Structure formats: C-alpha cells, structure tokens
Image (tube, rainbow, N blue to C red):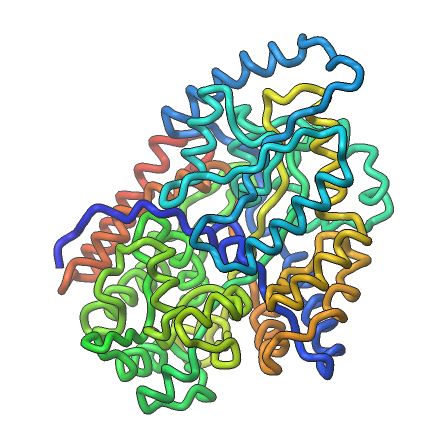
Amino acid sequence: MKKRKTASAAPAGARSAGGGRKLPGARGALAGGRIALALALIACLALASACTGGGAASTTAATTAAATTVAAATSAAETTAAAEPGAKVKLKIYDVPQDDDPESAHQEFAFTKEKAEAKFPNVEFEWTHFAPGSDYRQQYDQQLMSGDGPTVAHTFPYVDIQTRIANNTIADITEYVADWDLRSRGLVNSTFDEALSTPDGKWFAVPYAPYVNAIVYNSAVIKEAGGDPDKIPATWTEFAEMASAYTDKDLPRFGYLLLGSEWNAWTFTPWVWAAGGEMVRPNGDGTWQPAFQEDPGVDAAMYMNELIWARNATQKDVLESYDDMQNHFKAGQAAYGWGSPPGFSADDLAKFDQKQEDIGFFPLPAKDDGGRVVGFAGGEVWTMLPSATKEQRDAAWEYIQYISFDEEYLTELWALQDSLGRLTANPTVRNDLVEKKFSMASSWPAHWAKQMADAMAVAQPEPYCPNWNELKNEIVQPLQTIYLTEGISRDEAKRLLEECAETLYVKYPDAFVKK
C-alpha cells in the first residue's frame, strides 16, 4: 500500500462529539443513571489539568497573515462610531446544517433560528455555514484575511484557544466574563477555564459543549460476523483478534475504522494513553517535552500498523476523510469505530436501515492485562470575531447567554431534541441544569447510560499546551508512514517519531524544550 495524499474533509467530531450532530438521551426508567452519567462527565472533565500553559504563535502563513489583517481591522473597528439609533446590529453565524445533514438537524436549526430572531428583534442575523469538505480552521483564517468570518461561533475546540489568543484571531471578551453573574455564582462549567484565559485575567472564550469519545460498536454487525457483542475486548490483543475476525472486505465489513487522514493525532492520542504514555510532558516551567516518541507512543503506532497489515482488520482506505469513515459505520459496514453512540442520530442511521439500539460504547482497551483503559475528553467553546464592533460584541454576548444559558430556551430545545432522537449526552455548561437536562431524556437505548458513564469515568482531557495543534500537524506524516508501510520495523517507527520530536524542538523552541 503506497502512501497517498491525505483526505481533506475536516472531522467535525474533532470539535464536538458526532460532528455537532446532537446526541440522543436515556429511557425514563434510567433517571438515576442519567444523573450519574452527567455527574460522572463533570467529575472526569474536572481532571483537565494535564497540560496547562500559555499560547504560542501560529505556524501557518494563512493564520499569520490573518492575524495581521485582523489587528488592523480590530483597530479600525474600535474607532468606528456607534450604530445609529434604531439600526439593527448584524451578526453572522455559521450554524446552518449542510444540505446532506439529517432532516432532524434542519428542524433543530429552524427552531433555534426562529427563537433567536424573536428574542433579538434588534439583530440582523446572517445564517450560513462553512463550505463542506475542507478544514474549518483554514476557512476561518481565510475569511479573516478577507475581512469576513462568523461574528460569534462555537467552532473551535478549547485546545485551539491559547494559540488563537497569541495570533489575535479571536476577540478579547474579558469585559463580559469578568463580571458574569452566572460564573460568579459557580453555575458555569469551569473545566477548561485555564485554556480559555490568560494568567493576567483576560478571557477569550467561554464553554459550549464538552464531550467524551472512545470506541463505538455495532452489535448487529458483530452478530452477523459470528461474534458476541457483549464480549468487550479488554486488551489490545483481544481487540485485534475480534476486529480481524469480524472483517470481510468483500462485503464490505470492517473490524475497526482507523483514522489515518490529517486528523490522525486525534485518535492516536488515546491509544498512547492506553499504552501507558503521554503525548507531551510538562517541564514545570511553562515549557514541554514531546513524549509520543517514547516506547508507549511507538507501541501505539506499531499497533495501528498491525491492525492494517498483520490483522487485515481495517477499512481499505485508512486515509479517507473522517466523514467517509463515519459513513461506513452508519451504513453498518463496521464492527468498531470512533465516537460516542449518541453521535449517531436515529434518523441518520435509518437512512442505512440501522438502529440506535445496536450501537454501543466502551473505553479503549488496555495494552495488556491490568493496564489502563481510557476515554478521550474534549469540547467546543464560544468565541467572537476580533474585528467585531462594540455593538456586535454586545449582541453576540447576549446571543451566547440565550443559546447556552437561558433555562426557558434550553428546556424547549431539549424537549425538541428528545423528540427527534437528538438529545445530547454532553452535560450542559450551566451546572445547575445538568440534572434537569438528563431527566428529560426518553429516547436513549437502555444500555447507553451505563456505557457512557463507564467511558466518562476514565476519560482524559486532550492536552492544550503551547503549540499543541502544531504538534498534531507535524506528527501526521510520520504516523501515516508508519501506518502504511508494510513490514516497517519498530526501530524505523521509533526513528520517525524521534525525528518529529526533534523538529518540534527546532520549530517551536519557546514551547518545547529538552530537560
């Protein structure tokens, strides 16, 4: 198998579970389990202290140019006269579903659009979406360079924020957060606070949607392949044996959908954790050392190679886009995949004659008996356009307050989501409403609540140290080479990862320092 150009479609799941597609809720008899589930996620995300640190400069020419352009635009905006009395404030929001998204997504958007426009008659909303099939980060930066972009967005994961603080591609929103009543009362999820602010007390984002991902499975596919879906693999060996046994590429039916495209560090990271390692390690002085080149990282990379070549347990094209990979799972063409079960809405699965009842979830298996099982925690946050006027920022803040923190709106939204099979497994970022949200759920299959809670209990937050995104970019090619080279030796794999680590030391000397 020769190495090919990576797929270009951005995995929406890198921003939130199921790609912003809403996650469905639990049967009425599981009210206690739902509450425990929500509390479990809050508890596990509270551990988000693995990587803390300041921001770092962007590595792409587009972002650097965008930062320069935005700085000028922001300066101009600050001197812009206030809007004339009675004039509407314009907000551009990229929340319109894609044309091929399920009908339930369009129904949910129509509800939000109607509610927002009624709530804010003084706002002129421009509803749109990013172009499908390309990197949303690059689109955002390109739009900034042209003086455009979403006025307010929940596009970025929290790990992006420190870098974007440094390159001025998001707005300073300290004036809103510093005296925020809900926050001062302890009612706002604070899991990612250090990633969203600076040591001198400035704020650039607030939480939108925490999530947990791990291994999803399709019990119908496993049964069809002669397996037992109740037998959860406890070790890498068991996982590989099962995935291999379930694979028949002529059908097609794949044991494990392996993400090898340009987003491969996203799913590689928890396998490194399961091997007992880390992707990065703090030096204790604000700098970090890459750790993925150590033995656990080499173990994880070689295991992916084993699944592809020795076990023949993956899809044919491991460099396909994340969306294409997920479509295999939705179509019932895979036993195991990546995500969380409620990320697959009932109507989305119905397109392929699949059922939510067949979808399940478990943490990544440990490398060996008695080892570490893990889930992967992340989440999106709200940001504002740096060139937005004061009037736009004020309106954007009111919009954020309504969409994420208004109890009446949220209650109506959750009722709609539940009726559509889209009630999310994410805890609401307003802490006092978590129990209420999960008490409204009625559409989850009975087994999801416990499975989600089990994965949440062992979830580890994605690092957000300086230049973390650049690290993920640099490791793409070495991982692809390791994955796609049949017969590669462990020594060669280790050399490639060590060379990648050395590159990081050279390119980002302020972030990565040998000790």
